[in-house]
Image 1 (spheres, helix red, strand yellow):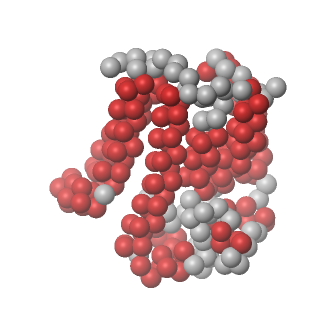
Image 2 (cartoon, helix red, strand yellow):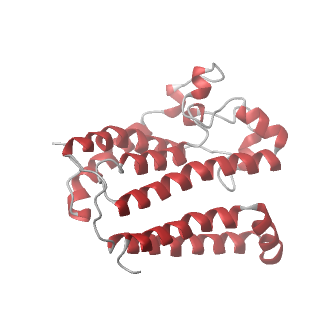
Image 3 (cartoon, one colour):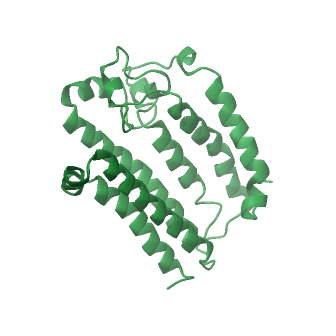
Length: 231
């Protein structure tokens, strides 16, 4: 099976499935009770790392099976979406977020949804999903479709799973938090439940995201052998 799209699919299923299985309450609770919280997190991280490396290894050895013609113009999708994806990721890491493990106490803050959390309570997850989805059109092959779809499913499905878990563990505080935020980007803004305050976000995430974008453009061909430029 090595060197096939089926191998990539199997690795992707284990990569995504491993996250969801270990995160499910039926599996997680007994393991935490038996191992302890931090050993369980170490086990979770180890499984995630092994399956991630396996997925990338399988993808690197997969044959190119064309599904559609990857016209160079399709690279515009990635070129336009990536700055937003990187901004969400950088800004997401710059703020305390109750959806992140270990940062649940911020639910009790006077304003638990500042800065980028006014746009979405899952900025990093959406950044990863946008990165993944924007890379599907310009590739056009089966292995890439499997790889990037797996990351998008893990990011967006994982965000929904976090919402469900936090709602069970912190019902009152979580209800207050979700009243100010949204799963879908900008939904809370459109519905008038929150407002974007540029002073809270600041310029640093914007600048850092732009710098990372330029660096990725410069290194993309050297690292992956393909130019990301749409011209």
